[in-house]
Length: 208
Image 1: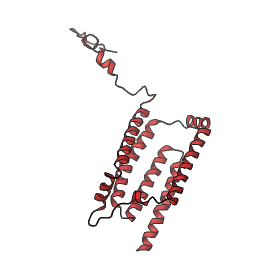
Image 2: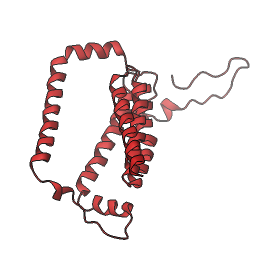
Image 3: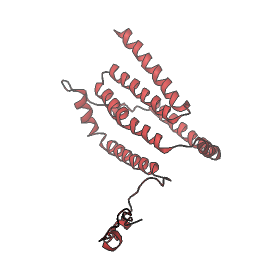
Image 4: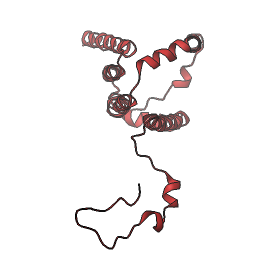
């Protein structure tokens, strides 16, 4: 049995690495989202091997069924121009390189701090018998990690609003709501009374 678990672990881990590489390497952003969905499915397989079936189901339902699909539609509607993106990357190459260096240094610092200092007490949770992992995760999430949980919801809300704004930018064909025009409308500029209509001519539009 342990041999089967080991084989499944390496299979899922290999597909996660390959799909994550495809997210970065793929030139088409739609294909990148598909590779991201594949990485989520394989990560859920690893959670099942660890006995965390609730996290596996949550990963598939939330990230694959909602976030990844939403991201896919956003990417398809953004109409990204590859040439302009290349120009932007070439003009800001030094800044992007500096940002990548800062992120890499931050990641190395976290790894060094984890290995040097004992941080097990931060993530340690009391194991209680006869309690399902769903109830246990909910208890830990809404007690010790309530602030990060609420902040993650705020970040997702900002991301949703940003996606809507990016989708509607520079598109004149999209009908937008103008509150000031709606409030200023009255009977004189929105209503036209016609008493007699000539046959074969029709009626002119009320408002152009």
